[in-house]
Length: 64
Image (cartoon, rainbow, N blue to C red; front, side, top):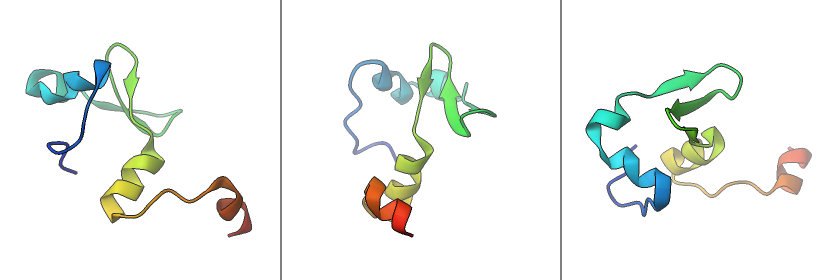
């Protein structure tokens, strides 16, 4: 996923630094990409962005 066009405020702006970005790992409990300093990205948001869809509402997810 290309982060170039995304606004990355605050701590997220560190993701633009290639030296920091490569320090990613997957947290086994969260199932999410994480970086040092407590930075993590929600896997559901990443999945929806990769598909080009919106996030399902919680009520819709329960009905599915």
